[in-house]
Image (cartoon, rainbow, N blue to C red; front, side, top):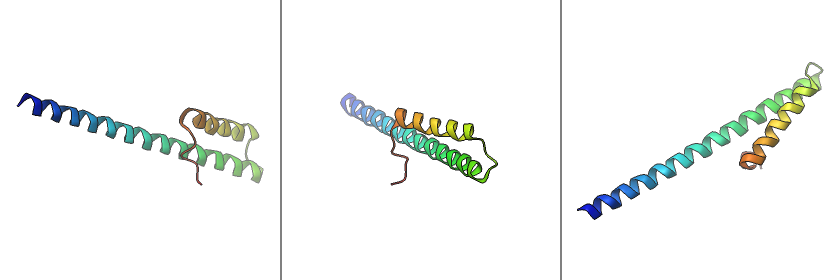
Length: 77
């Protein structure tokens, strides 16, 4: 009986680890998408004459930093 419980516990822990990894992946994707939206908004405002080039630069740096840390999987293909 102890062997069965040990295996069940291992499976449950693996499931939890996989669920946490999936959650982290989704959060990383959402963060990347939000950074892209901010970059797009900053660029659009700059092109219309109401934005600040420094804001666009900061938004681009944030996207680039996210890519360095998490990869570019959130970018549209």
